[in-house]
Image (tube, rainbow, N blue to C red):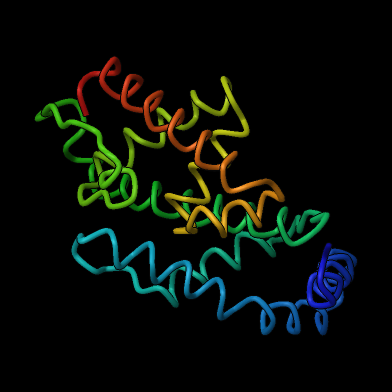
Length: 192
């Protein structure tokens, strides 16, 4: 059952969509700490050179979410899924930019395991994961949402289950299946 804060969040999402700057400001205040925590967890696990701080990731994601064509989010789950997608897109864009000079050469085989799903140090790994995740979205949108929330939003199984309004065991099954599928997809795509 949705909490009072979930109802307030949904109201603010509707008002922000209608163009209310006050609602957008209150919405940011309401979700900022949670978004920053997600960003900090994701960046802390990356182990890569820290050129992007959690605050910057949240602000850039916020700008993408509240852009000129602010979509209508149905509820908390929908909003946080969009936020996870925005963070993923930002990290992928940064990875692409950092590897643009390296494209086409120097590929090396890297085995994909769960730690790489959660903690990819090299931009090439983020790009390979993104390409595989795009294919996974075509095969199983539910599994792709689980991966996106676990990997790019840094949510636990319990948090993912709450965000998707499903059971923890269902998330565990989707997570296990998606990891195996991604391993195969990444291996078939050239060995990243």
